[in-house]
Image 1 (cartoon, one colour):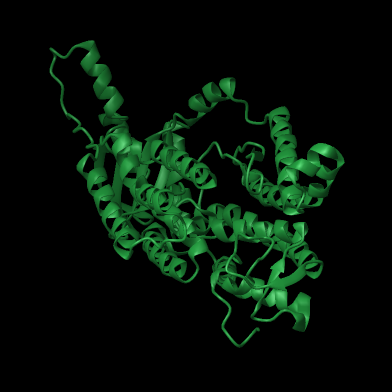
Image 2 (tube, one colour):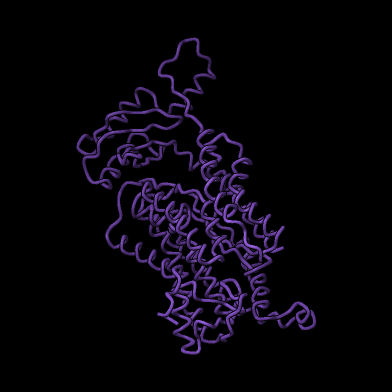
Length: 486
């Protein structure tokens, strides 16, 4: 039953990702793309339901879907890729009012405005060579002659002088690493006003309601972790309070994680929603929380700072709970049921950091032949650590994907994301409990939404901090070497 719930959840997440991203750039039916992406999970789930979890899945069924489905997926995306309609440069006197409106819609500037636009590009800053008209977009290509940040600020200021807030000015790198400017109609203000009428930016009552529901679901999960049975709970409802320490610890960790994102977004004056918790009535009691930013990220520094704030906050808040919880946990014999999801017989060997912390807190009593019966607060700290690791994955829309994008640029970050997918798959062969995680990475798009100024690079301090948090990801995921810790 739990496997079916996870499969349903995975399918909903996959459909949401496709609807928000890929559906905008391809005509391929969404249901077909969803089916291709879900094929590996459907095949594996069918095998487990038919033959049970004890009979291993054949190697061909385990590997082939991961190799074939991504190829089919990208073929379908590019086969149905939307083409930009050509822009007519002249119109005849017989054109109707409708045709004129369509042309105005497609071409955001006229000939007179084009001259003003060319004046916005000083040759000593950015030598403008060509203007390309796309659907509602003007792409300005040329040669960068100065510092990217100075060029962006100068040209942005010039365009705002002639056109006001009519355009969003984007500074991007092409696939050949040649910087170009793009002018996009600024519908953001009007769209934001219309959207806010339906969904206000801050809804504190809604946020508090989700918080209290999550407090309830995580308390139930904490009671189950504390070995409170449903029968004993019916006879004595006060036993539910045993789940409260786990619930409060986990909510503090998740709350600090999302609050760090929220506060950093507000620091850069980016309108954001309040943190909204996501309660679920099974497993750990929640799927975390989220905040939504309503305007584009202005530059890569802001992208980096907003993305790194959350994982640092959750990592630093998870450690005290985890260490205290481990010190109050008990040691049990290692058994075939021991694993990374069995909190009553937890095996920390899969993680260098977890194994080291377990050895430091439990001492010589913990050997390679032992597992740990985790205290509920240790479970909260462990869950927080795993949520940190998931969000630090350098793939697509994860915080780690934003971080490598900000450090290395979008093109290199996509390569890093693809390598990470296959490394996680190899790691899942050593630790089967990571297989669902590895599968999820193949469902996440490698493409990360660029900042308005996506060319200006970070400073050395931010580069160091980014590499440091990626190092944290490594010590969480790399297995503990045999004979060194135990």
